[in-house]
Length: 308
Image 1 (tube, rainbow, N blue to C red):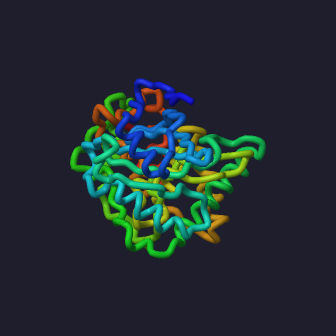
Image 2 (image 1 turned 90 degrees about the horizontal axis):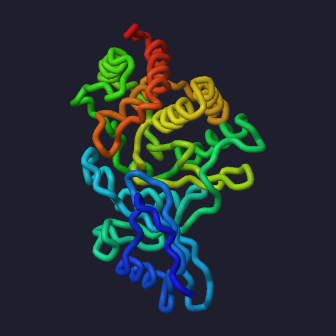
Image 3 (image 1 turned 180 degrees about the vertical axis):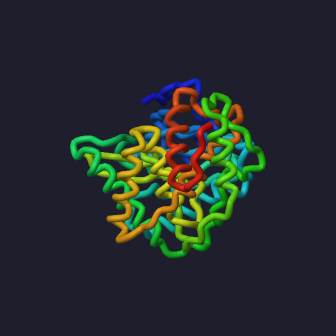
């Protein structure tokens, strides 16, 4: 059987040297039979089917790191995800398992991990509707935030240090962004630290038959305030489904967690982490209005409204 590679110019397929490394990691006689690109901006992700000598089909994911000018190497590395997945192995949540690693990219063209592929696909609310969707998203955070050994992870640090305070290129209300950055520059609320996904968005969750089947992309997992994960999901929901759904998620998390007082400071920080823009991470112009409506609502809640 010939190797099948689904091509995509935006997701450079693994070369022959990388494929040999994968086969060696899967045992003598293993052969990569199929390569399919997956989504991702900061990584080159490919789904693989590897046939072992005995004929067993292994479904794996090759995850390779792209250079990131905005993020220090220590904050964006395979070693960080390895540490996170090691801790998560003892967590009551389905996450990828580590099969092999090439942190230096000696065999894989770039720093890389070979992971198990989880069942399901990224998705939104289906038969159970939005209410069930939000409950499952909220409940998935509970075992994460109570994970033992969390203090061994790097501390949470905002991606945007606010050294450069420029509104996005397509800003309709520049003064709104300026006010948001001024407000976020104040002291952060004091909260206990826990294990964090740090980029908890519904597009980093997988679903099968209307049930959440796994959570992926742990490359920026951290030790910090649980509100950061709540804020990350709220931001994704606000842009994808509207402000009312983001508000509902906050209420649902409060209920399933047994009580969570959420400070909108963390929501503000999450939006501003999109800045400053650079060629690899521009804000989408068609999302400008939604981003600014969300910012406006957050500033009003923080008592820092603007008419800009």
